[in-house]
Length: 153
Ligand SMILES: Cc1cc2nc3c(=O)[nH]c(=O)nc-3n(C[C@H](O)[C@H](O)[C@H](O)COP(=O)(O)O)c2cc1C
Image (cartoon, rainbow, N blue to C red):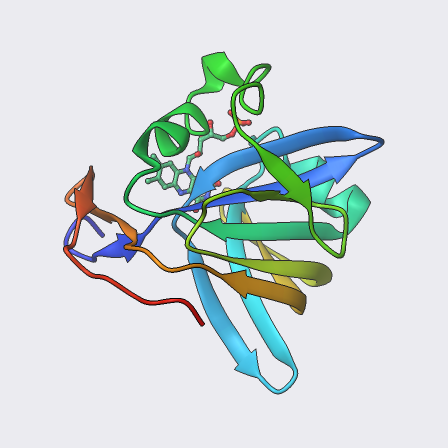
């Protein structure tokens, strides 16, 4: 898997006003009509039971300027202060969208499948948005700037 280049996302959710989020690259599209995506989440991740309970999640695709956010949301020691210096606004589902991300995909949980240590959460896409910029990449266990650029829209 180290030889498979990916983008980097922050999967967010919310429960009774408390925001949760973690860094994830196990994210892919599933279906175009209806629009559906999947994420694979370790059952030990603090957001795992929250996604099951709230039935909502938002996948924030990071821009190349957001490496610090990716590191912070993958650091278990920083679970409590992850959102303290990150500006967000609520998506349609109420899950937080990280301001300045390259794009986001806001989902209602549709299916849940157990596989090994992880759960595959399949979400129906209720909303999405995109900004101009360049993606944060991940390859050979390190964050990368793939040198790609995309305009708005
Ligand atoms: C680049 C990268 C990609 C990751 N992808 C995933 C993923 O797809 N699913 C997952 O469950 N954890 C993934 N992780 C690990 C979680 O981000 C990490 O375990 C995090 O601490 C879990 O959240 P928690 O501390 O709130 O439990 C990834 C970590 C990195 C650095």
